[in-house]
Image 1 (cartoon, one colour):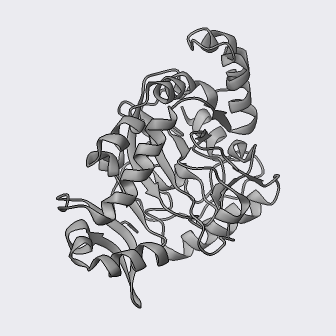
Image 2: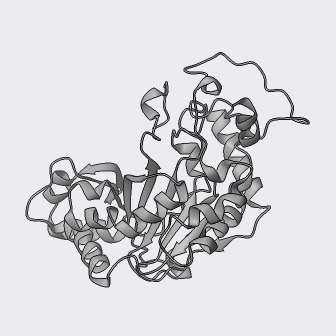
Image 3: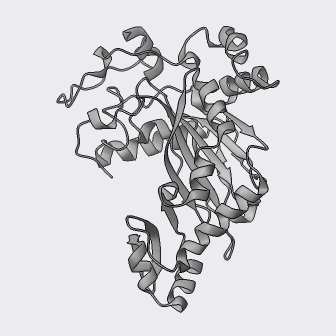
Amino acid sequence: MRSILSRLFGKGEGKEALPVRPFTGIDWSQEPSNPLWFEQTDAIARVPEIARKWHRPDADVLLRKWLADGYIVLDNCFSEQEIDRFATEVDDAWFADKPAPGLSVSDVRVGDVTHVHMAHADLLALSPEQRTLAKAQSNWRIGEFHLYNDAASRILRNETIADACSALFDRPGLPHFSLTFSKGSTQALHQDTCVFHTWPFNALIGVWIALEDITVESGPLVYYPGSHREPLFHEFDNYPQTQRRTASPEQSARYDAHVDATAAKYERKEFLAKKGQALLWHGMLIHGGAKFVAPGTTRKSFVIHFLPDGGNVGHRVVGPFNW
C-alpha cells in the first residue's frame, strides 16, 4: 500500500523530506484502497481486457489515449434537440414565471455589486430590464441545475457518457455535481483531484459538454495533454485530507505556482468544441479557462464530475475548509 501511494504522490529517492506538521484527520496511508487500473504499473497491458468490456469499436484506441494524454473526446452522445433544449431552458431560468426553491445563480452582477450566489427568488424579484442587463454583463453560472430542470437532468444521466466513464474506471461510474456556464470562465489552471476528496486516488473523471460551438474568442477550455502523469503536489502528502480545499493560504499559493510551472512543460491546447461534443479528462490533467474572452461572446457549457460508487469521501475529511 505504501509503495503505491509513494509512486502516486511522487515520493522516493531524491525527494527532500517534508517538515513535520501537526497531524489532522485520518492517516490515509493506513486506509484500505483498491487503486484504479490506470493508476497501476501494468495499466497498458490491461487495455485489451478492459476494451472488451466497453461495447464500442474504438475502445482500445480511446483507452490508450486516456493513458497517454489524460483525456478523450466523444461525439454523438446527445441529440441536437437535447442540447438546444437545455441551452434554451437555462437562459429561460432568468425570466421564469415563478422561482425554483433552492436554486441560485452565481456571480450575478447588478449595478456595481456582484452577488456570489443569488437566490432564484431574488433574481426574479428584479425588474425584467434589470435582469436583461445583469444577464448580459455577468459571467454567471448555475450549480446543480440538474436538480431543478428535466433537460439538464437528461444530459447528466446520458447513458453514453455514463458507459464511457464506467469503462474508464473499470467499475460503475456515477454522476456527481454539475455546473452550467454561460461564458468563458477564465479559471486559473488546476487539477480536479486537488479540489475533490476521492478515494481511491484519482477516482474522478471530469466531463465538459459544449452547448454551442466554441471559438477562440469565447474563452475556451484549455488543457495540457500528458500532465496527468505528474505526481501529486508533494505538500498534499495526506491526500485526500490534504489538498487545495483544506490548504493554508501559503500552501495554496505554492500549489498554484507548482501547477503553472508543471503546465509549462507540456503543450497547451484549447478545446474548440462543436455543439454536443464532450471532453472527458483525468483528475490530474491540468486545465483551466482561456484568459481572453471577447466582449459579448458566450461559451455555454455543462460540466459533470463522475466518481465510482463510494469514491467521494469528503464527509470523512476534517476542516477548516476554503469553500
